[in-house]
Image (tube, rainbow, N blue to C red):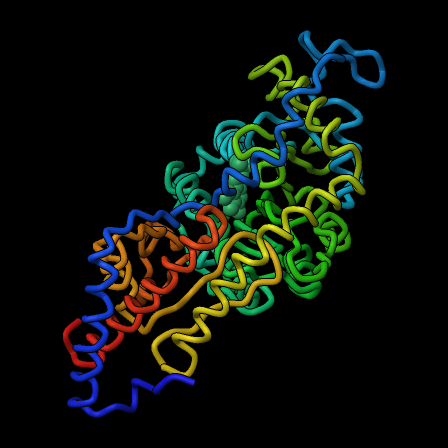
Length: 424
Ligand SMILES: Cc1ncc(COP(=O)(O)O)c(C=O)c1O
């Protein structure tokens, strides 16, 4: 257990500061150049998937469709069945997209703004609109709502999902609130999993906006590291609440095969799906069926996907353990930080003391370790308490990661002690 720094006298803090500065300077002398800024798989993980790129001497789908040619806007039936089996979604709800689910999310938002929903008209005609942003969250979600001019409302995260008391209160009275971002399993960055109760409440809550939409981005839905956490069915919850059109579901194989070279999907109610396909059919004649075919040949079926995810977990667990063990060894009991212990996904989130995140990351960068920018996990890149830091352990190799985490902990401590001394 570490010294609780918050109880130290000024002279003790000053002595500690000198010691930490010497440790920090040693790291700075090493001239490190490590990057933990984005959640990307390491090259070795990608190498394991290269078979996907070689097995393309057959190009016909199960029903004989020649995948080298135009068509099949909604995606190959076997690709829809694959995602349906893997995620527990009726394939009839599913549309296959291109190489990234973020494009589907952006396009869904653009469509809502320009054309509305199957039962309501263009959102853009309604004046100033608002979107709920559970935070810390995924910066690229917030960038989409920012780009379309939404006022973003930060919602605090509890250990079982967004603070639903606040969500219910806000959406019930304000028709300008049009939707909410959700990463329901192993959220980015905290690794939080939505409880059945939260899912049920999202499906049934009364919203002043009749066309309120849940952007259900289940990007880490199969990324289990320590046992399988189950997620309740958002479509069933919306139907049970009398809101069958409320959820748009997104997923992709980005973090399963190749980020940016995978297959994405979106799912919705029958009415919404028909509406989406009508507009998507103007945008494209069909997405890349060859990629659908080769991805399917590689992953095969829900069992094949499970085996692939277990192989990935074997590679990722040691990295998550380096993060957890280093934080525990260096910071437990110090009073300078708290952090999450995700059971899956891609990230760990750490909270410093208030007003210490920027300084921590400045110190880390100056000594050669780049991490996701402070504030990035909040709407408008503004963390009101300047304390949340996203740790992305997947890209560096274990040796580099250990070094980066050792330095990072020195930076957390140095920034914390400076704060306690009243210097920041
Ligand atoms: C929550 C979340 N959604 C979506 C994405 C990106 O997915 P895609 O590559 O399918 O656009 C990421 C990538 O980090 C993510 O963390």
